[in-house]
Image (cartoon, rainbow, N blue to C red; front, side, top):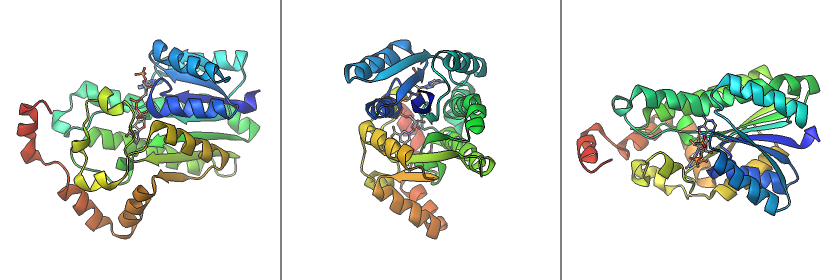
Length: 272
Ligand SMILES: NC(=O)c1ccc[n+]([C@@H]2O[C@H](COP(=O)([O-])OP(=O)(O)OC[C@H]3O[C@@H](n4cnc5c(N)ncnc54)[C@H](OP(=O)(O)O)[C@@H]3O)[C@@H](O)[C@H]2O)c1
């Protein structure tokens, strides 16, 4: 059974919830991780209604001791997972000087600490089995920063850094790490973090919006055929190619079509 057990963080909403549904539909038993129990139970019910199996683990994944306790219970009751999907994330898009320290700390907590704790909890079992997969849900900000999303960007770089470091650590072990990057997703992330689409640079709005369900399908495909980095949709891949070929002009274009300090006072006045 343990070979088909997956832990998904951020599973109460958006990309994590859709991924949990997709995995359960493909026969995985899914452990649903987030802080809010009601949200997780709703996802558990939808999985059960579709004939799947899910376990609720309501906890703060940024708290190492809560994750360690969950891992112990899981091993005892269900075995150790062969897949961890890190989709827990938080963070508004703000200039650094507009970001209170507590908000920066919450962005360190998720995605970075949550992903680090969950990987750490299950890696020893994966290494022993010489098999396992760690999937991290990332943002294009981890490669192509845009203005006025400072701490958000820094923490998406941290998540990509964790992934890149793990790739080096895991050479020859049979365990893989995948960074799956999406453009704009029509999840409640924007509502949860009080972000609006017009905070994106105008150039970024050329990338089509994808649904959380589509993200779930892309992650399921990645689980079946792991790759170091997956970028979705196609238009975003073109931006990645552009950034690799011409990093300076790409940075200029993104900055030139993004938000500026000069507009900040006006945004505050209208509640931005
Ligand atoms: N939406 C997009 O356009 C988009 C695009 C690319 C990448 N991403 C990235 O994908 C990730 C997920 O985004 P989403 O769109 O699915 O957002 P979402 O709908 O707001 O979901 C975020 C999830 O993370 C959970 N979470 C937050 N902090 C947590 C913690 N400390 N411990 C456990 N769970 C925690 C939340 O549940 P609780 O609050 O109940 O804990 C919720 O389930 C984020 O890192 C985001 O940056 C999003």
